[in-house]
Image 1 (cartoon, one colour):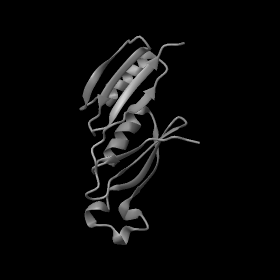
Image 2: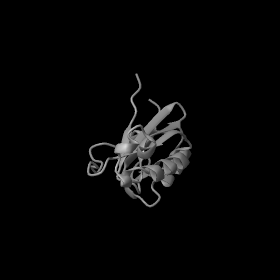
Image 3: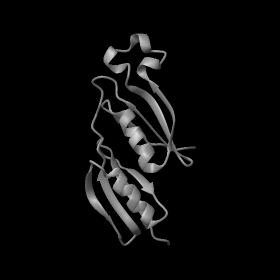
Length: 136
């Protein structure tokens, strides 16, 4: 079984996933717009160029997303995408990259459980936690 986050956006999915590809060192493996889908003829014109589904690979992990259909977007709340990162240096690098034009809600720093831990909401409204745990 795989457990993968699926993020919805209010028209910025393509820009967000290009940003995540850069920040996380991943690769966008697939993207389909509403206009490229089998439902293209039934799709409102303003939605045709928006992302119906995209998939980003980061190592063996997957992050997926789409633009919500017209009138169906809800602001993200009640979750965070959490990254487990091996080294404090890499955690700081990723945190800095993701926080560009975003809002830091907890600066990245050492905690009792982690060499580095920080929280932010990125420029697209997605909440993130970056965690580099201590051993044991």
